[in-house]
Image 1: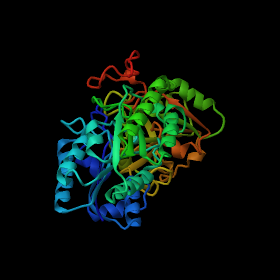
Image 2: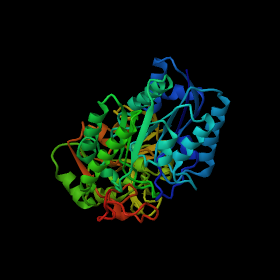
Image 3: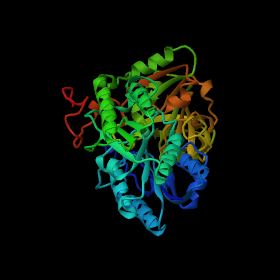
Image 4: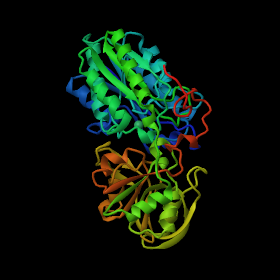
Length: 492
Ligand SMILES: [Zn+2]
């Protein structure tokens, strides 16, 4: 059995002015052919799970291209076309394949195309024809479209946020694809998209409205007629008509059951829609609370400056407040400012310098901040993820510096990456347990690895493009009415 394998993953924040170009993919993942298997084997990723399951079942993989970049603005036409064309050319050259495995995101918005995944899946379908099954893994933040649901036979969304089940979903998609090829399953799906736009700060799956939905979805999956149930919380910062929560149910040949279950979950989400409204603490109150808290470390979650949600990653407002009140024993992890890193490299370890850090990408993340500090550490930015997310996957932050400003240590990085692993502090010699305050630029993902070590977590409402305060955004293209932007929205 031969399975075609490809990955194209990007979460696009259309409010970002940082274009996601070829360099952004090269800084993260842009691999071809057998290199894909070498890079992702035994990692906690969808591809890791797909490779493992395919090998376990004796299926032969035909790996094509694997591309991913840190979330930012629209994917440039150049790199999108390059990856798509490569995928289609490899697929045509592969000859007869028994099935197709795609690892996509669901919230990718290339230049000139709103529904990136719908475009990819439709194009792949055209090449393989109607009979070859296509299975796709999608991020929990996917904004599902009818083109995705009708083009693929099987969609498998992550069921967790933080996303700790990526490898599991990759393996599951592979196994269900193999079952479909063998004629043991006849996937029949239903998609529902209630007018609901949850901010990402209220999407965690450990508690709250998403937990309730997944408790019910887990129950539904116990029915042997149900192949899988995915509830996508959606990605509100992609200002496209499809943005928002969606439910996708796939059954074994039972359309009525798929429709009924999808409808039930959509209504359940709708009934509890008010729980999706999120409120964080203003910056001064959050810093004061952290300073007054007992024990350490106290995590200040800079939820709105999450590069994983397309924010700049160079927000300065919490750092500014820490310095203003004279906080000590604090770490800011991690601030994206390649120019500041270069200034630190030029100064050298142990040297003092005055420079502007952060606030340089746009005017949505606070102004640049002038600081005087001592360079403690310089690094090439290479580390390995050790937390529950992406365990084993090599990380690349590019040239990295630790700048110590009166015992507030700022980790300056050159490649954008969300602070989702305490290893991003440890690898530059900072012990997270030894510090009073850890500012972590992440909305939810940090919880997987920081929650077990944090004495307390404080969710901060600082400015930024991954803010859970949706009133901060001027939506232009999203479907209206939609809750909570339009409180009077009705459904069904
Ligand atoms: Zn996600």
